Length: 176
Image 1 (cartoon, helix red, strand yellow):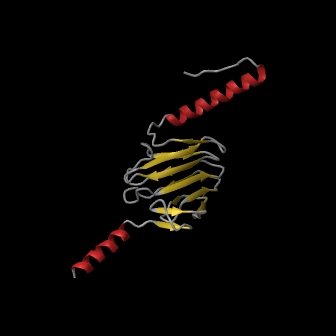
Image 2 (cartoon, rainbow, N blue to C red):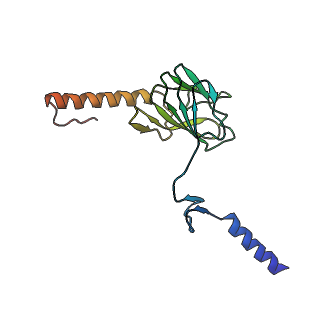
Image 3 (tube, rainbow, N blue to C red):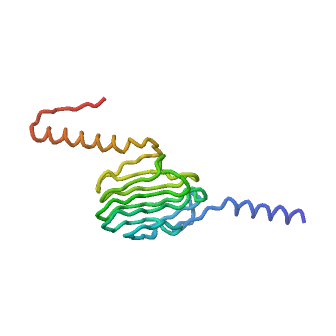
């Protein structure tokens, strides 16, 4: 009986520490996927609430709309990618007085996209596009005015590039 117990415990401990590999016989992480990953895409044009099976949500409407996130309380680590592919402003709202990086809502203008992650009590932005071709990673930043600062910094940099190109006045620019 003692041997059976020891063998059972060994089998159980291997099972508890198991790693799952898809496309590999020797996974390097708890979940190791060697290949492409397919996640659902949901389009919407009117007020809607993100669901448990949603991942990438694309707004396609022509009038101002609100996307409401579910409560972050019981879904730590849940990720939503949201893109404004419409012609009006998309407002992302929360429930239960939760916040998005300290704010009660977040607005996306045309062509903007944002990645939202639940921390178990609120929503965090891990990245947001500055334009349709540029992404800026927040990495947990909670300063609401940083969005405006980044846009201003990009605008100043673009202005300096234009001055240099048009007039050849600047050889080197150092920002301290």
